[in-house]
Length: 202
Image (cartoon, rainbow, N blue to C red; front, top):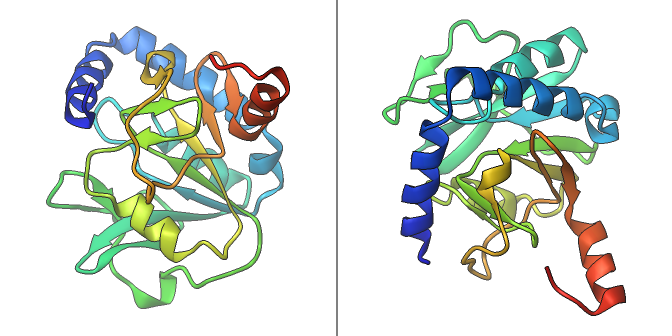
């Protein structure tokens, strides 16, 4: 199956979720996320602002403020994507894609830091190797490739049906470190070690 087919199918599946199911799944994902050491001990949260039927991040952002974390969200610019610190979800701007973005204020743009940082990744489908299929623009791959010297721990947020055995991937694609769904936290590195020891595949 091609990337475009997977995008179409999984966007449709995600849009078919009932409001009740989505609310329940989002609550379970948040509960799991807040217990993860990378969330609890990182002072920096980099996250997308959820759009349409994506896993909800707005309540995650609100909790991060209460937990006194620095919160950064992405903004698409001419050369790619940059992250800007926000102190509130108020005052955000709707982009040409319909996604909420921070205003471009240079004093809030993220500057490189070697401190550990948690990044929440969006996407339409993911696999057990940490590969992801986004919307096709490649903004996250470009950004993370340009920041390979930084300490980003990358958790993909998804519903169970978005995690597949494998998805098509390019060598330039940046892998997630873990996938978090409403029922499990799937650690990619632990899975690789287990696979190497058992000499098997899922």
